[in-house]
Amino acid sequence: MLRDRENFYIMAGTSGATLIGWLFVVVTPGANWTTSPGKLGLDAFITPTLVHFCGVLFIAMAVLVPWPSVWPVSIIFGPCGLIGLAWRAHTIRMKHRRDFVSLGWQDWIPHAGFPALGNASLIAGVTGLAAGKPFTPYAIAGAVTLILIAGINGAWHITLWIVRHRDGTS
Image (cartoon, rainbow, N blue to C red; front, side, top):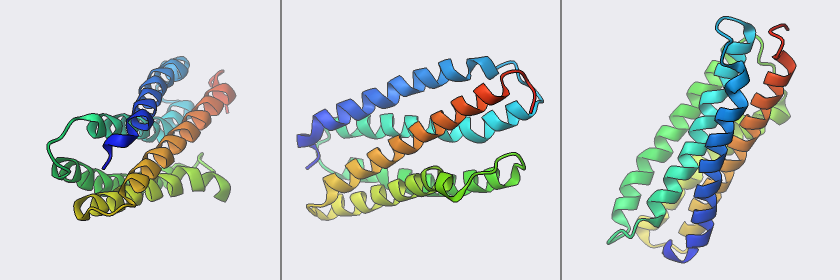
């Protein structure tokens, strides 16, 4: 059911892997921040963004494996979606605890909404995969797309944070 969308997953996996590399390049200037507000700012965004890109890469790689049936993918993706929702709740609490992270409602949509919706879509896709429903490929592809967009948005905010705080002040 997912085999006829190989090009999408090859492209998504390549994007995730490339963006993981670029993320490391972008955060290198902040590597010497140990106790400054800049370090706290990076911590609030870097791990969730890295998790998004790694998640996209992982899903793409798992879909491209020539599994003998849909059950291994269902067994892998089900817990991934549930863990993703739990992780999203954790990162929202972490960002709320940090005084310096003042995101407007329009910023919370890609930071919290897109990944949560993506993980819910992954769970729906797994359910459809196990039941042989025709919406399954679209739900899983939608999950990958939403999580990739959330990662790109997080990387953008990391880049802006570094540019604004590169001198170690503010």
